[in-house]
Amino acid sequence: MRHGEVENPDGVLYGRLPGYHLSELGRRMADRVAEHLAPRDVVHVCASPLERAQETAEPIAKAHGLDIATDRRLIEAENVFQGKTFGIGDGALRRPGNWKHVVNPFKPSWGEPYVDQVVRMMGALDAAKDAARGHEAVLVSHQLPIWIVRSFVEKRRLWHDPRRRQCTLASLTTFTYRGDKIVSVGYSEPARDLVPAHLRAGAKPVKGQGKAFGA
Image (cartoon, rainbow, N blue to C red; front, top):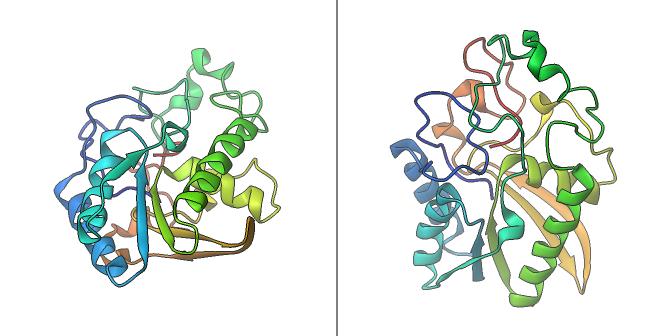
């Protein structure tokens, strides 16, 4: 699961910075997904250590009488633009100091290598599979790592256009195992009606409301 909306009045790429919590709308998103998952056979809930992920996991864990486990492998991707604004129409790519960081989108040169994200996210998935074997687990992570591990499982190239990620706020990307092998991947948006239109999967970016790399 991707976490809910975050309180971010300055519009910065918050990345791994501490102190970024869910907004009131984000909490409503988390509650909606908890209601959606309440009938499911969830026996393990685990989240990234970042506040927004932990807060998203809270109502899900509570609905199933579980404690939240924390796995650092679920954390947001590293990004050199952390703490800065970097979106559609903000002029970030016109600043010479940023050019050296965007020379190689295939790696990517601005942050944690895609391959490293695959390794750690697959490790987190495998650990959850073992913790909930025969049942279901919910992991709360972040847009980019979720999309990258899904791309790997579905045998797509890892480099991509960030605007085309199918990983809306509070969405569920589901990996189904048979034994130790992933046999299918699903995607759903239980809180879609709560997500602002410009932030939904596949939405056209709006100037001043650009999507950053991840979140």
